[in-house]
Length: 440
Image 1 (cartoon, rainbow, N blue to C red):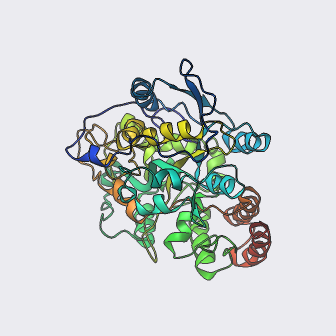
Image 2 (image 1 turned 180 degrees about the horizontal axis):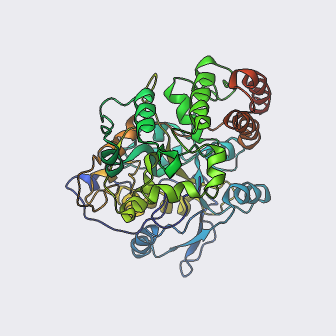
Image 3 (image 1 turned 45 degrees about the vertical axis):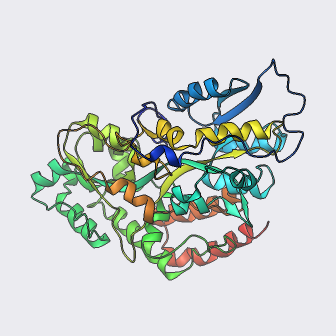
């Protein structure tokens, strides 16, 4: 899941205009009552409080918000820290007690660190903001970081997975475009087979990124299955819906006539070659996050977008992050002031507006030019992208996620490589994963 660079999932710069009424939903109100009296104790009026803001990317658009924040709050100096090897470094900093005051945490990480009391409950701050409107957020994103009434962060932007398709390649093969209103797994496979010409390194679909285990989650959801129970205490890898979904896509992958198989990928230069094939106009459909819009614009062919294909239901992944306050912060009130400002309507828009995906606030998505829309000279059904936030879901967040995902990932790789069938190995793996995630 490498979307860390320009025109990718979390890199933003552009500031656009606002529409009437959008600002009314912004959460830029004065800071709420302090959680504890020591959070700003001893701060000198002559010396601004320093707030460290940790994130995995440079967050170009955040600089626009930061400039405005400094003018409004000269007594708070926010220092952005770009943290490499984020998935490993943040837990290490938490263990050492040296987390930044505010962390732009990945999804499951927010829950895990919250459960371990490394992130504070921000709900009291939210409750203290008269102008903070929770209903402005998409429901899935607002509810996700809450356990036992505690809120472990506020979301900013989100990148939904949708299906991009190469209209020029469809035309050349004489294949009808996907139907925006009704697009099933069967439709996907039929259209992909009709386009594929492996001898000339043309395939109807991108390959499955086997090492990115969470890519498989959406395919399971679309068949009404799950990796975990809703409370994250059981692994449901052994459920029929989950087994059927994984095996369906594994069979399609191993076929080699729908998407490049593992052996074909090696033959054309490895996993990175799949992206090159798409840019070269040799992939018919790509089920991926909306951050790839920029690369498609640069590729020079006509493209359009529909929802991910569905089986039992329409569903997809929506990627993003939650801004959380470290329990070790000495300046929690000032940290909230920055967090609140940064996740306001305008703050989210500033961040999202060059990454080609929407914000988690509806009011941010009412600002024009819309962040997910690229400047092209052909028609694109851009509304498909923000619509996915209404039905899509966030990656699951069980306890001990790294260990559980390693067990699941090893099993997935066996199925995708043809070494084993899902029905043969998933029941045993599910039992082991349940032991891991229930150990909290």
